[in-house]
Amino acid sequence: MTDPLILVLDEGTTSTRAMLFTPAGEPVGAAQRELRQYYPRAGWVEHDAGEIWEKTLACAREMVEKAGGAGRIAAIGITNQRETTVAWDRESGEPLAHALVWQDRRTAAFCAELREAGHEEAVRGKTGLLLDPYFSATKMRWLLDNEPAVAEAARDGRLAFGTMESWLVFKLTGGAHRTDAGNASRTLLLPLAEPDWDEGLCELFGVPRAALPEVTDNAGMFGETLPDLFGSAIPICGLAGDQQSATIGQGCLSPGDTKATYGTGAFILANKGAEIPHSDHRLLGTVLHQLGGRRHYALEGSVFVAGSLIQWLRDSLGLIERAPDSEALARSVPDNGGVVVIPALSGLGAPRWLPEARGLISGLSFATGKAHIVRAALEAMAHQTYDLAGAFAADGAAWSALNLDGGMSANDWMAQDIANLLGLPAIRPDFVETTALGAAMLAALGAGLHPTLEAAAEAMIGGERRFDPDMAEKEREWRLAAWRKALAAV
Image (tube, rainbow, N blue to C red; front, side, top):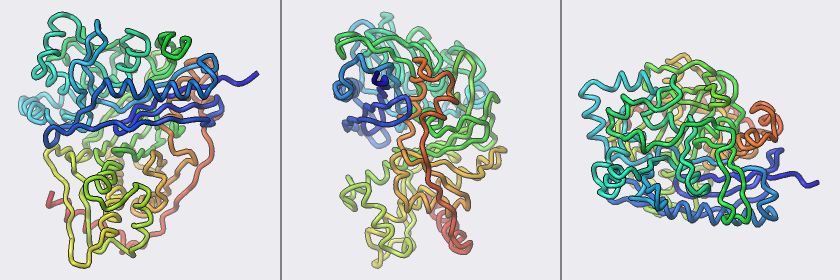
């Protein structure tokens, strides 16, 4: 008998994908579509949720056909760009406005008002998060205040708010309105220690509780797809935000295990087990996963710009034709030629949290070539990681090694540079798309293909490559000094 397959829907910031996995973690197919980014003003970033649904569905149908039909697929797992906020009409099932993307900074003034009113410590104490435009609650409030269709739907009881996994579950099932605890913990509306939305937080941000989804585990039965979508119904059995999913896909299941994902942004999570995390150095506490009603937590550092910087070098500056070209260019020069890139194209995230900061390229001269700028852009990944390493260590979560993943980590030069600057081993799995793998593991658990998450990890996670540091201390000190000088100017 042929083994069943797991269908993963990986809804990212710049593209959406569907992937097929075996219960042993072997990828057997993938389909991908790029997503349009809308930038109506500086600092504003939007998506068309209707486009995301249509392209995700098209990718999923390709993979169902490749599998030989819906009957071959045991379960669907969904992983998603977190915090991005969708408002839709429960009755029509259609979006009421463009989705506000996690990178969007339009609510910076509202966050500042709340901070000045003295709310940040209470909010952080409950949610583990800071008052920053990154998170979903202020985006929901902006949509209510500025999109008449959203406000009207709220008055009529038709409004549904959710992050991308909620939107996809709603469309796939024809009406289920659910979110997992990990995604919910990124909204500013879910206390880390409580099972459900907090009425006081909903009131503070002006978000109607009735518009929010049901909070669930990360693995289980979340509904079945409408039969006409794929020929027959397929159960949805795994949900996780992309960074939690990557942490699971890396096998970081024990306290202290730490991973760094380099995708559109860069996100570092350290497993804290059942301990609710607290940071004195502006890191975030988040739900890593909830299984059987029991939560595991993580300490997180979030960097807003990583792979999107390379995309910007390609699409806006024309310095490269393809993202992988960045590695060859970095190797083509002996050093950065004095160039430093501060990639604050949508503000600075952890540990500084400066939404108004903007990017900088310093150290330019007539001797500067495009290779120096591209190399400096890649070096910025190591520098941002180094800064976060200091914050984690100060919070008592020092790293002994760092597990790398995400599409950008396939760049060997960058992986080695991160190990060099940290002075620690960097370990990269042979299969770097651990975000999708983590969702497959959760779906396999929810469908009963594996009895525990640990058993899924043992069966589904493959080999790895290790990068050991080999940078001279003098060079490290020179790099760090140049970075700090440039950062001070920002």
